[in-house]
Amino acid sequence: TANVPTLPGLEGFSGEVYHTATWPHEDIKFSGKKIAVVGTGSSGAQVICNGGIAEKVDRMVVFQRTPQYITPAKQMVLSEDVVRERKENLEALVEEMKNSSFGAPGTSTNRSAFEHTAEQRKEVFEAAWEYGAQAFALATYNDLTSNEEANGFAAQFVRDKISEIVTDQETARKLMPTYLFGTKRPIKADNYYETFNRENVDLVALKEEPIVEVTANGIQTKDGFYELDMIIFATGFDAVTGTLFNMDIRGVGGQTLREKWKNGAEVMAHLGIATEGFPNMFMCQGPQSPSVMANFLFGIELNVGWTARMIGHMVEQGIDRVEATAEAEFKWADMVQKQAEATLLLKTESWWSGANIAEKPRPKYFLTYLDGVKKYREVLEAHEANGFEGFTLGAALESATASA
Image (cartoon, rainbow, N blue to C red):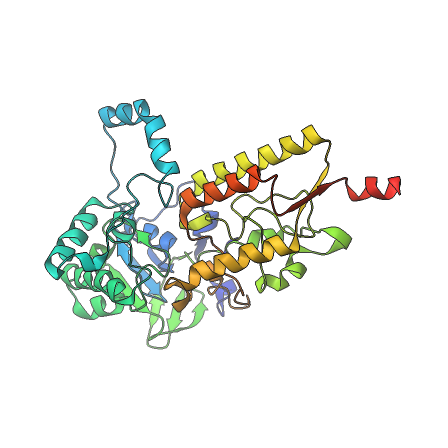
């Protein structure tokens, strides 16, 4: 669910206002305009450096709260030969996806950063930087998110790249991330840092120069005024539970999901699919599934396939009610939390834990399964083989009451 900030005076701004989550279908006219981009997460990075916007506008002012590690995506048009080859080998690619940690070819490695010298590590990081996609975060070393020293190797490589690419060193300083690499969502974007070398692009570091108010024709910060025709909010999402809560889902006795999960403080979902007190409700890529930590579409396929087989089993057995047990969802949530504690992820606040939503409590249990889609798939299969372990299967409440 889109996170739309409430800035003082925003309602009085006379220009255009957009949010990346609700982008209009019609083309936006950028030519000759002074625009602001608020937010430098994945959506913000795409707006800032993609589509030639910076080349069209008169001025772009980027308002950055937290500097990010942004590595190249290396997007390209695939040749007909490559497309044909991949289609012809689709089954093999799918098998590779099934057996990879992150549900995508080329995203697994068993190599530690300590197996290499500093010079060798630099060569590995450089090759991954040039290759793009998820290679830098996922296919360089397997201990970047579990060992702080190994993490520091990757973090320093990106900071060195920023210093090398960005010509104005004060701007480069503001762009330097300081949190542990990979403990926020790794961002992929082409020519991101290069964009800040343009004369018509300015950077405002909000932790040093906070916004005071929005006026009719711009944004006033602590240190200056920025005249604007357009404000683009790239401020992300109330993730994982936000949309589930907005749906006002009610379970047994009228209890809402928000009430059960204490507004996000105590989220528990067995297998990331179901939660006690909400019978016959199956979540796709729900809390404590692989979700955003892997190939999202592949995760949906796993959840849909498993749920379809569960429903098929119910139909065959004449069962019309299934519900996760309280014990099973606690064991699952506790296991997911222990996975997170074995990494560096809990050392950084991120939207994975709702830290970008001011009023949202921090969850007691981590919200994403971290052992990868291969192990997750194997766990789903094991639960199914054990008669859908962790679930109570029986007659619906109304039928049971009528029978009594």
